[in-house]
Amino acid sequence: MFLGTATYKGEINKSLFNPVFLKPAIGILYRSNFNNHWSYRLALTYGTMGAEDSRSDDDYQKNRNLSFRTHTWDGSFVFEFNFLDYQVANPESRFSPFIFGGLAGFYFNPQAELNGDWYNLQPLGTEGQGTSAYPDRDKYNRIQLALAFGGGVKIKVAKRLGITIEAGPRRLYTDYFDDVSTTYADPDVLQTQNGELSAVLGDRSIDGQSVDNTDRQRGNASDKDYYMFTGITLNYALSKKHYDNCTPFKSKLR
Image 1 (cartoon, helix red, strand yellow):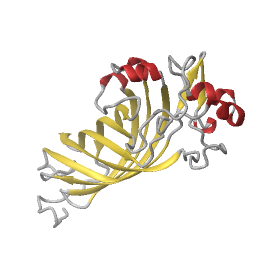
Image 2 (cartoon, rainbow, N blue to C red; image 1 turned 135 degrees about the vertical axis):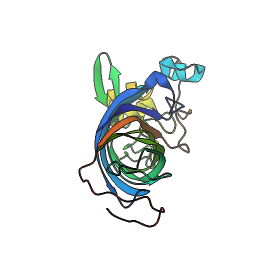
Image 3 (spheres, rainbow, N blue to C red; image 1 turned 60 degrees about the horizontal axis):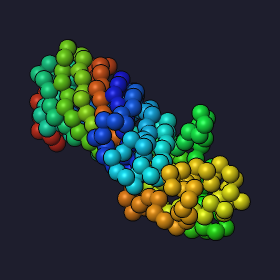
Image 4 (cartoon, helix red, strand yellow; image 1 turned 45 degrees about the horizontal axis):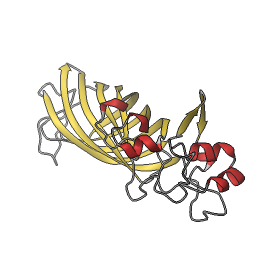
């Protein structure tokens, strides 16, 4: 079982390690060992992520005034490599640093708050998606793939019990995790074709009432988003079978 935090990096939060926007995350996982060094892991993790321009130190972001949250479900399959001999059921194991890499599939649904109510942003097409004026901007899919990688340390604490401390970033192939990517769309087009909410939530800038922001920079499409889970996993060995100390590519089962 996993318990930890979730955070994201994108247009509204510039760093995965910004403690201001840390949110809780939980998960479950199953791990199977090939030997003391190699294993694979299946995991399902849930976390809430979000950020607010108003809490940034950057004047541009403060004026842009965007914010979002998303409840994210993450299913991952990764391979792990232990630098030292380690397996919870092995009485000779103590601890080991490790790294991992693989793929994750995730569901996200960015939302914004307006007058106390939360609205799903993807159906609104806040950057002109789905309008005739922006035929090159399609509505993004809320189910996507990501590259999962990271590392940490595994520690044995009892005969069949261990803990893992790790950080696991996800490199996304979308820039719309926060619903911000390209330029401001024409508010008249948004209001006519996507509705009033699309126009209001598409431009929430402080100077938006006095300045036409159409085609001005809203995000950076060339810089894809990230999110990350960091925390502690409690591991229990379901099987007493284990491997004797071995090289990373040879196994000796006991």
